[in-house]
Length: 208
Length: 208
Image 1 (spheres, each protein chain N blue to C red):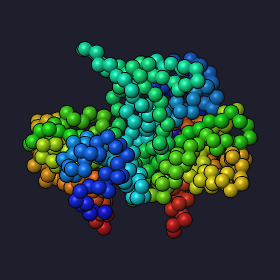
Image 2 (image 1 turned 90 degrees about the vertical axis):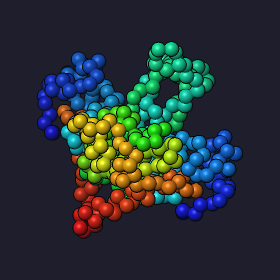
Image 3 (image 1 turned 135 degrees about the vertical axis):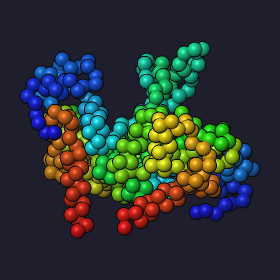
Image 4 (image 1 turned 120 degrees about the vertical axis):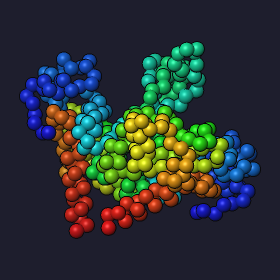
């Protein structure tokens, strides 16, 4: 599963969205210009197809104001607005564990601004964590080509710090130190469940 | 938590949507004309506020075709279409368990048509069940004022039966026999987690 196919040919074949394929075949895995969301969706599809995990991105919440019902054709939404999500973007199940996470990108080199999160997203993750779920953030430093998984308890710590005179961001060094570097590969593109497995193993070790 | 307040006053006060309140105060809990979805959403809110479970309804998936970005005001979606959901409507975490379920209503008296489910919804629930999740359907027989929780394995059995010469529905008697009758109450309106707790206890008993 961690084979890094040199020219990305197989990878090309498994893509569901063919539009960017030509560009992808010559790019390396960490710098292909795909959005983090698209890469995670593709990774989740791989995990589902291989019965490793069932994780989906939730649809974007929309406030519908006006809908047309034309005769003999599909209903058309004529007026609607984007709503703020009340939870995180992704959740699902892996190895019997409830997973809940969000994915964020920054073009900063040295820190990740906490303003990327809404308070209710942190609250939601904390609630899920209290109930035994595994909650985390996937954070990409775009200009560094680095993706980290930052586990819930660490994220909550840095979030709280800002309300006690601390900085309103997490430094890249802190994330590198506390988080798990996720190395993009062929399939799944972003093998974040490897880090989740480590978190699970550690939590079991703590119980023994 | 199972106190049935006779005039529903407290219940009235905790409603987030005030529009139907006047009607609610005089109705009994099982026959108030609310949609099953609205009642489940309210129950989930109660469960969240009391830190019993974190369950949310997923937003309706929408295919956005055209968006206007007026100056100095929010983006307006001008053309969009409803998409078919690829999963179930609800998921979350309870007592460390991943929950995944759908809610369906029928005006039939004696049977629940399996056409209410899409195959990919059943597939999704089976995948989650295989990974240790608790998956089920909440089924309301509107004219009987009955709500049942039908556990995944039973639902999968009845679903499969139709492909082996069986009926394309589940009889009310089968659902009453295999499922758990959920009695509407004050708060939460639909205490479906009581049945989930029984399922968890049974599964633990099976392991011992």
